[in-house]
Image 1 (cartoon, rainbow, N blue to C red):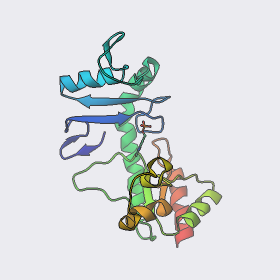
Image 2 (spheres, rainbow, N blue to C red; image 1 turned 135 degrees about the vertical axis):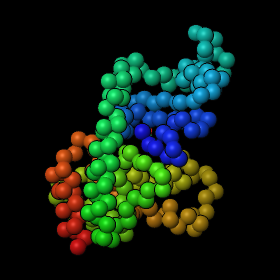
Image 3 (cartoon, rainbow, N blue to C red; image 1 turned 45 degrees about the horizontal axis):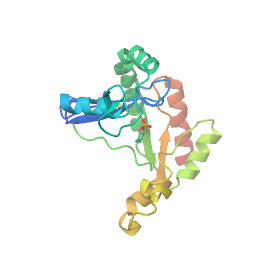
Image 4 (cartoon, helix red, strand yellow; image 1 turned 90 degrees about the vertical axis):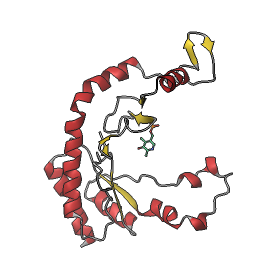
Length: 204
Ligand SMILES: *Cc1c(COP(=O)(O)O)cnc(C)c1O
């Protein structure tokens, strides 16, 4: 649904990948994803990769994975897809309310690129005392998240990589400052106001 540089993402490049993880703007009821491309050869290649590297059953031309989109998930997505633009518009409305009301509270608000029309999967703010802000919201009954509490380079899985952390001061501070505010197309105006009031109360 994102508009950027005059078109929707997914159609501009050689290929694009989408996640239908349940929490996404277009979420299945289980895991799922899709790749879009205008290149028939690449499309064929992706079809094979998701199916054990086989185009014809039991003939494996390359090593692949079991990553087919389950038919039931596809059916759920088919039902939800016509509502996506409306849901994204509601997310944009909520983001607008947040951006307007939270402008001068010492939070770093999301930056929107010129000519981009984001669809607000998350609404992520930054604050040097994130944990204090988060605790106040929790006390007010408002759930928040942190995306993400640890940088990829600080994961055990990448411990073998020679990463010079002194050269990544911004990335280093982000896990301690990021806070994802409630964002969902089913939020009511009253709920948005509740979040805003709670943030005003803790930051003013
Ligand atoms: C959703 C999401 C992922 C994970 O997507 P999968 O469908 O689980 O592969 C990774 N990174 C970001 C930023 C995401 O929003």
